[in-house]
Image 1 (cartoon, rainbow, N blue to C red):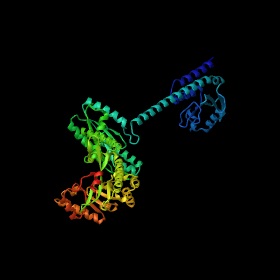
Image 2 (cartoon, helix red, strand yellow; image 1 turned 45 degrees about the vertical axis):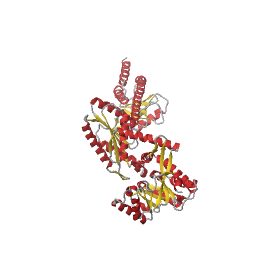
Image 3 (cartoon, rainbow, N blue to C red; image 1 turned 135 degrees about the vertical axis):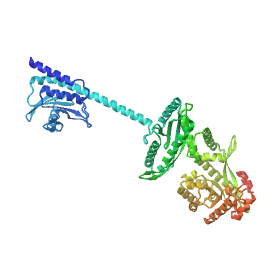
Image 4 (cartoon, helix red, strand yellow; image 1 turned 90 degrees about the vertical axis):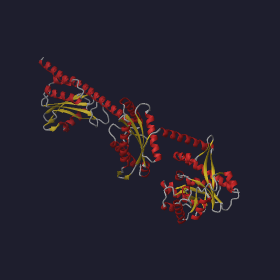
Length: 605
């Protein structure tokens, strides 16, 4: 009777030791400690199936194996039990057998091994053998231990999965709201932040500003050095902007290399707020313009900033960001001020720009453009050629000024389509001219080519194709370029012009002296003619400075074997003065205004 009570007491204590603890290691430590006391053991061990990360699992898989998990005491004869190859061999041999328990004697110790489901082994180590009564009582305890281990492993697996899911969800939320490269907020999140900021400024009666910052010269880094360097620069720009603003400022990257800042904690007083925002903008411009030192070299950037003020919810977040971007674009266009505040007229101008762009596209479809020609004369009043000038005969407004639509076309790249139209129409008109008897002194028709058009890889082939299509002499077409090409891809431009020269198409430099003049570049350009800008020609007989400039241009042209022609000639006195200086070719209202092609045909006879 006493033996039965003793065994029941051992069972009860061991089951209580297992308890409801969810932490597997804590539960097993308590159990092993009490097992040592109840069973008078020298050591107790738990081996459990674990994955490569050491996480307990209860289902066999390719990444898991039974490994030592816990012993009490943790050391035996001064050696950590988890390093015992003897124990590991016992467990390996036992696991390969399809039995629930086993006892073996080794080195004067008894080892009682019990199977924990399919995932583990419990070992009791004693100096003396256990009684059969106690051995028969242990399976009930082992069964409870097995179930508790499974419950604990399941619990921790579930906790781990929940944690991982939360981390994944947090990562997804982060990726949905942040830019991967810079870690700044992205386009969608900045709108949400601004909506919140608008509400806060309305309630707290504060002043807020949105800044739109666009990096200049950044594209050239990507194109010339590589995107990996551009990425480094962007990260540094982001860091510099962070360091130039306080922690309350919201910073986002908007479109490639455009940054949006929300500063919503400025005073309600407009003057004070403007002074603060002015200092912030100045600091941002200064820090961005400081050279970027990278392993690949030193790089310099500049920026343009547009900003919009808000104090209440009268404007939406999208409207405020749009207005700041419009102001930034206006600062970029004017290139006078690096930072501009938004004004309503900017939107009106932009809307007009968009409307004109659409109308230009439609005009190309409807064939509303036409070429007029300004005749060119020599000092003997012979017509020696003509310059083709684009005219837009708008169906409702009549003839539009090129000063309005040409800059818009250049900004929107429609200038390429317009240039192609001019090229083909001019070649068509040259063919019609040559079907008549041309005087020997009538040399060629010249057309203006934009820097964008000249930079196109297919430009030279297009010119050659049009000349061949209309079967006209290549020498009857002249290309007029401005000095602005020197600020673009000069090498490609020079190569293209040299190819055309070999083909027979000559080149003139238009508006000479008003742009980026360089004798070194001038010598390399395969041009045969310099066109003296009208700004130097007007009242030349009264202006000694302009007279000196034109004299130098004429001498310069002679030194590089070029001819000169004066533009904008309007009086006989101007003609006589130009002849005295050595200029013998002219165009301007004194000789003829631009005329239609049909009148050009009549004009020659």
